[in-house]
Structures are given as C-alpha cells and as structure tokens.
Image 1 (cartoon, rainbow over the protein chains, first blue to last red):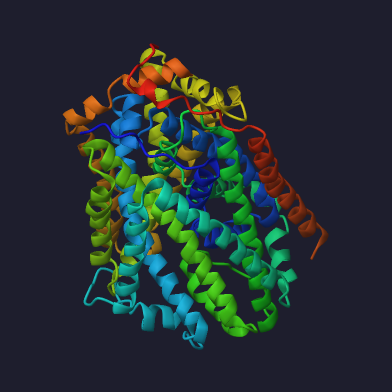
Image 2 (image 1 turned 90 degrees about the horizontal axis):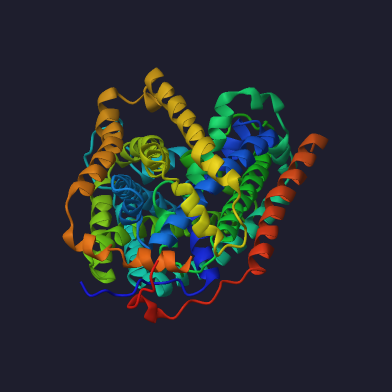
Length: 514
Length: 47
C-alpha cells in the first residue's frame, strides 16, 4: 500500500463541530427529558453531573488521547496499547455496524414526519397512524410478510446522503457537513424552545421537569440511569471518538476540546428537556390534565409530539422544525458511526476512501435496507437496540478500560493511564490531574459494572417488552453476542500488511515529540 | 412554577451552560501549537 498521509481536520472548530454533532443525537432529544423526569426532576442534575465528571468526560478524554496518539481507528489503536485490545476495537466496530443499520431507519421515519407535519397527516390518532398506516407493523414479533415502501424509499435516500458525505472525506465531507448541520440544529432548536416556552401551560411542564425529588437520590437505579444517560448520549464506548481524534493534528488540544464537546452535549440536552417539557405542559393545560408518566423514545417523538402539534396554533411550522431537528441530529451521528467502520477497514486494508465508503458503507446500507423497512422491522429494531446498547456499548466500554488499563497494570505494572495522561497534557488547555486516573481506572469501571449488573438483573426478571424468549434470543442476545464474537474473530485474522503499516515509525515520532 | 423548580432550573442552566462558556473561553486562550514540518515522517529523530 502506498503510505498516504492520514486525512486531517481542517480546523479545530471543524473537529469540535463534528464531535459535538456525533454526540448530539436522537437520545439527547427524546431520551434525556424522560430519564431526568423519572430520576427526580431537578434533583437528577446531581447524579447526572457526577456521572459526567467522573465517567463521561474521563472516558471521552481517554478516547481522544488514544485516537490522536496512535492516529488509527479503534482496532489498530487499541492493538498498540496491548495486543488483545484489537478484539475490543473490532467489537466496537461491529457494534457500530449494528447501530448504523437501525439508526438510519429511525432517521428515515423522521424524514417522513417532516412531510407529515405539514398537513398533520396523522389525523386524530397519531399512535394508530404510526404503527398502522405508516409502519404497517405486524401483529406478532418475528413475522415478516411485506416491505413497507413508505419507509424503504426514504431509508435509501438517507443512505445515499450519508455515503456521499462520507465519500467527500474528513475535511470536505464530514467537517463541511457539520459546519452547516450544527449551527442549523441550534437555530432550529432555539426557535422551537422559544415557541414552546410561549405556549399556555409551559410553566406546568417546567415545574414538573425541575421540581427536585431529593428522595430519588437514595435510589440506586437513579444513579444507574444517570451513568447510562451519560454513556449513551456522549457517543463514548463504541469507537467514534477514537476515530474522530485519529484525524487530529499531532499537537492539537485534547482536554479542552473534550470539555467543550461534553458540556455542549449536556447543554443541548438541557435545552431539549426544557423544550420537551414546556410542550408537554401545553398538552396538559389544554386537556386539563396533569403531566403523569412521560415516555421517552419513539412514543414521545412520533406519538406525543404529533398529538401536540395538531393542538397548537401554527403546528405545521413547529412540526417541521421538530422533525427537522431530529433529522439533522440523527444524520450527524449516523455519519460518525459509519465513519468508524470505514476508517477501521481503511486502516486494516489500505483501501482508499471511496472504495471503503461505497464497499463497506454500502454493505451496511444494504443490510439496513434489506432487514428493517418491513412490517416486522419495528420489533427487530427495538430488540436489537436494547441489547446492543446494554450488552454492546456499555459492556465494550467496560472491556476497553479493563483490557487497555487494568490488564497491562496487573500483568507487568505498565500504567497506560500515566502514558496517556502525559501525552494529553503535553498539548492541552486543561492539565489532567491524578483525579483523571482515579476516575477512569476505578470510578468509570465501577459505574459501568453496576449499570450492567442492574440491567442484567432486570433482563432475567422479565423478558424485555414482554417479547418471547425465542424472539429475544434471535434478535437481541444473538446480536449483542454476535458483535463480540465477530470482534474477537476479526482480531485473530493475521494481517501482514497492517502489521507492517502499523510499524514502529509513528511511535518513534510520537515519543520524540511529546 | 414553584420556587424549588425555579432554583433548580437556574442552578442547572448556570452550571451546564456556564461550564460550556468557561470551557470555550479556556480553549480559545490556548491555540494549537503549529504543526511540525511533515518531512520528519521520513527521518525519525529518535525516541
């Protein structure tokens, strides 16, 4: 392979916008408000901020540092820290593969709902419209009888857009797109929130959202939820940030950028919470009811919001902005997820970008297009999403700390954290103290481990969503375990070319400079 | 809105948004160091 220089971000702002675009996704808009509300409202801020400071930001900084230091995607970068790390890297790539296939599907729904908003085509019963008219969901999970053209075509369009942006590369594709997406998203959302706050009843919603329930803090599950929200919303634990940081310049700042990206993600999340709850307050006021249970996820975006849009004056405008925001937030995240796969394959095979994007990215698109736009697609999406989140992302994040940090320490007293800290501190705006090593080496794995034990306990208590065990084995457990197995298998394949390319030259350069 | 809700809203906004602004200012005060010339790729200078 000709040794091409690695692509680079054009500017620091460009990298930051892409990193923020990746972190801000659908979860910020529809997951955070419901999680915070269930977790004690205003009181949730405490566990949330503690989780951000003790686990989210430390892990984000670790991923940035590994990416920049080794200038490779996760498999090759982790391998440089310790040989078995490559399996964790490929595992994360496999997780990205799974997530990309269904994330694009949700995006395609949002695209359609931008259009539906104009005439409020969901009518009087948005729930029946979503599951019946639009998705044509089959009665039983596991049965597939037809493709749903209303999802199929927008899904193909989403994939074309994603692959074309990726084909333009880091600077002219991802960076350029995010320079448009993120400001646009912020403007859309600010208009939405201002509109929501001026609706009758907005204060009822904000009251429900922010009134602290301090007793909730004694409930372990609230703390688990806080750590979970931080992990899932920051886009950490599945290789994205390692990949994006691998295109940084050698002397680029790391810790300051991580703080900005992490806090920007939380700032947006908070804004979304305010917007969503002000809107829910309007619904409560107009129906004379109160804010009771708030469901996050699909129900919030595709059922509750359409109901509200139909109720409010100039609902079409509000609807277009809301679903437009979902499309932009989702698109910038999906691009980053697919980039992990593209980058990993490029690093391993030396394939050029276009071949990798249309070959490998095309394969992801094909799997997505074949499997999901059917009448059984929603069940498959729901189950694989749940299992790949819990036993993919969270477990792989834990594995990355154990394999990259703990194992070298216990085997030969090698402190990889100290090495990484030195590397980050050499160029960064904010110097890391020992707290970083303590958070990452001890608190982060404990938080993740606790989350996993708790999730597993619930899993064994009752079947997720009441699905049959057979269905969950076929579409949930097998997906999560399959991603792990594929990760391990890919790491066992000998790659002479890659070994040669990943030779020592960069280490020598790196050590010489830092 | 109840007083406790207003207090928590203000505290949340100040910590999270204030933190973001502080982080941006900190980062702006620390421009990236210039890249070293690319020729070093072919001539590692030891380590």
